[in-house]
Image 1 (cartoon, rainbow, N blue to C red):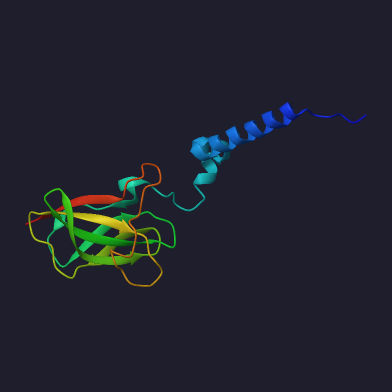
Image 2: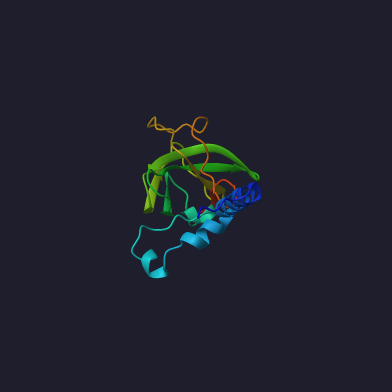
Length: 157
């Protein structure tokens, strides 16, 4: 015997599908698809959001900046060193391409840092032309907060 569904049942099913899809995209997907913690230990390093995607310590002034860690997936990012003008980001002093997670990553500078000043590390996405251009490369954004990824450090004497 064939059963027929009413139009109301069909509409209710579509609405339920839309609701579940919305929950999936608004964060419910993480709880539905997260692997067990034992599986996480054997996979690639997690992508850290916000300022955790890059870590830098205060360091002596000089012609290069050492980044403690960059934790982004391949194809990677441009890591730029910027001077600070008060509370605003200023000129880019140098940039280097990190093709994935890296530790003790050195960024050579076109103009060296000065003692006793604050600088920033800002991440940029690559536009696939092989050269860094802050006007062409978009800033790397934390998808959780929507904020650009910036980490500050100071230079010592």
